[in-house]
Image (cartoon, rainbow, N blue to C red; front, top):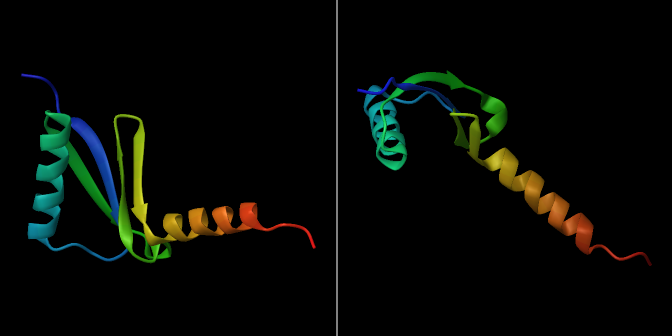
Length: 80
């Protein structure tokens, strides 16, 4: 049996035990391997969550989406 991958799950609000279990199950299913998850809260995410596993960051936070939208809008600005 392979060793479990460490996974850090950071959310904007505290997750219930059932929510934690559901997120961990989804990660394990997608990666097809066991994960050993740690959970943290970072209110600066505004909403959503980030998952760091096996050297990969999956950022589904509202903060990230707002930053990406701001970059897109800045890139579209044309000098007057």
